[in-house]
Image: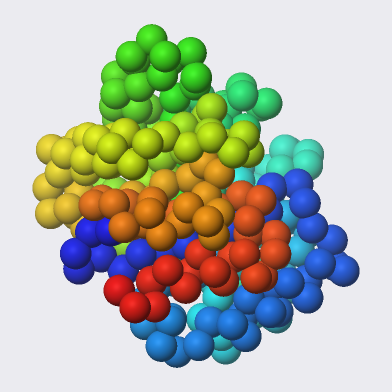
Length: 254
């Protein structure tokens, strides 16, 4: 973690979750006492169908609710899409953009991720901008170049700690049980911090950089203790309150 930066643990439910699983979200809300909330921010990004009811369940609790994607436009003839303004209207506070599954499954480019980030800002949402290299790129020693390029092209001018969070998710570690070594994570996060400071100055020093990719209770303490790892973007482990809260609990005695 980075001194003087309040970390964030954000859960990405992906295409999982129905109304009968909202009890897990309620348990998360109740498990975040004031002492823990003072140490770490916690958020869950359920499917769009559950955003509004999730915000009502988490009302007056420390748990933040967000979305997994948004369209770049505020409204229009875009069947099946939701805008950042719609997310804000459902009382969502943040939005994931550029997740590798969106880049792969929907052909999203750095330019489209940048446009969605601007849309988040327009609607008053905080954008969690995802970047990450594939296994082939990692094996070829191209990770630093790929990540630097994605960071430069996916994050708009004007990014600061209050509107933008970076999430580094090595594509080869998502849902596979594999994770980079602590040294590799430290090296990549140091690189990203340097790139942010070079471009944005002071705000780059304060911007949160999350790690994502098979984060679970068993490895969270080791990963979250690494310098410049300012929290986690959690996938499967965020579906169960017990696992999600265990990851948050890493910060209680920090």
